[in-house]
Image (cartoon, rainbow, N blue to C red; front, side, top):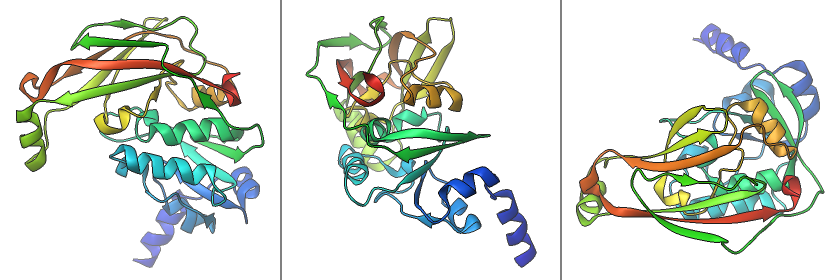
Length: 253
């Protein structure tokens, strides 16, 4: 058993340049691999709700977001571009991600790991909604060409039947289809409750290198349109309410 444990820890050993940068400093790990902390002797300072895929309500997302604003925020964040159940990594805790984007800057990328450091570049501010629209399921919504700081809040409502079934069983799922200017299309499962906190869809990253550039203010891939789809019409109301706002400050200047 001990040999198996040692072998597992060897697989979790961080690259030397990463370990040298964060050793002895407070570190959080996003989204979920807490084992990095034990395997590398890190000073782990996690957010209140861990891991990211446990953030299932707006309130829990707000709790984590406040953590990164306050004095208990870690100096470094070890980030990997991954999630579960077909979600986009930005969708797990969207308000928390906005605070990370505004308050942390990339310092090092080594393989799949991006090291973020808390910076003094200031806070971000979100505007009042500049567009609000009600969409039918499957109806395309064209996004603005200027995607700097674009935040899209999504209000998906379940029908009475959907609420009843969802209270006892896993209900049908809803998804966001994304179309990029280069023709690439992706589909991601929505976390319906937290999507109301606003998804950063402007230049939505497709891999960890995109995230690094996104946090430096560069949006590699423009999203041209989105549409919402579901698996079970009986579980939802007929439409989805969407509002658009903009972040300013941080990498969104």
